[in-house]
Amino acid sequence: MLKKWIISLLLAFSLVSFSALAADKININTASADELQLLNGVGPSTANAIVQYREQNGAFTQVEDLVNIKGIGEKKVAKIAENVTVSD
Image (cartoon, rainbow, N blue to C red):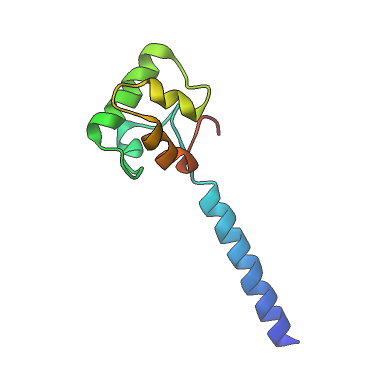
């Protein structure tokens, strides 16, 4: 009985941990340049370009809009897409 309870508890904990990690996407509409640099492949100049583009053109409606920024291509967008969002 105790063994089943421990296994159930561990399973529940792992599911909660996975959900928390999935929710930790960076919102490209609200993130600072420092936060954007946490993304793999995004350095200071790219992060600043994202913030500058957002300030000049308004909020991104979809992650794929990042290709409109000079220096960001489809490959980079594909690389970071699973780690970013445009909404909360």
